[in-house]
Amino acid sequence: MARIGLMGCGSVADFGHLPAIQRIHELEIASLFDPIPGRAKSYAEKFGGQPFTNEEDFFKSGLDAVVVASPLFTHHDNVMLCAEHEVHVLCEKPIATNEDEAADMIAVMEDSGKGFFVGFVYRFSPSALQIKRWIEEGALGKVRHIKMVYTWNLHGQWIQDDAGKWIESPMWRGRMLEGGPLVDCGVHQIDLIRWMTGLEIKSWDGFGAWVSNYESPDHVIANLQLENGVTASIEVSFTYGHTARSPRSVFTYEVIGTGGVARYDRDGYILECRNGEGVISIPGHGEKNFDGMYAQFSRFLHTGEIGDLASPQDAIVATEIAVDCTDRAIAKRGQTR
Image (cartoon, rainbow, N blue to C red; front, side):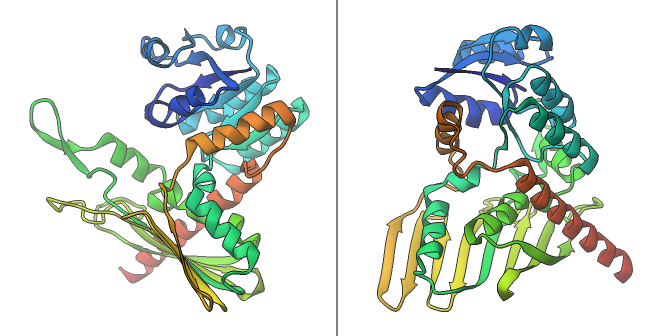
């Protein structure tokens, strides 16, 4: 049984990390840390484990691995502490606020001899794994283009407070200030494209549309050029129907090859491959799979098998491309005003 500690008792820990760890029999939620009084205690009552508001006491509790699910600006310091206490790390994306911080984190974790992985949870969806298998088996022929779309309203830019007054959603504002939809969500799609194809992205460009008045675009299209002449496009949005009474989202993957096409649509969980032999239809799944990621993390802790766990280098590549595409879109807006 591997003893797991978690740093950062926020929403992603509540709906994703902690329930999944609970369901993996070889993992134990041992300790929870959050500097805000009461947060770790309330999560401990819900999920188990010992609550802490002091980092040193948290690490003294005897841990095999730590999940860093704290806010982005704390990732660097928390991973540094993990390296100092020689525990394995699974860190939420993005791993750092800049390249220098990321390099520091990678170096100290390598020196510690412990594993360091990033929570690219989309890799473990059975639908993404099946598309990767179709590509590897040649069911689509040679891949020529990949199109990924995730357009939604991020639960709305405007929400009502306790008094019924309309205010800007703190989550919406926070994610826009951190870089917008391509940096927040699109890094998953960038990573999936590299992971599914096994190809590196050689060049890219970004285009944006602005509904709200932030520097970063709230609707972004990234065009990518991969090795072997493969192209890809990613479209992500936080303002897709954000003022509609009944908004909807679009979440799709499409892979076009010389011998067929694969398509995943989260709306209805459609997953299919159409090629010269006919149509293969398989029940689709959600785009995330925390249980699958933690099952693989458990295998790593017990056997050293990395499997499809994402490395910090994978995270750096995806983040750098997302940030640069966003910056290019911002530059184009300035040129056309």
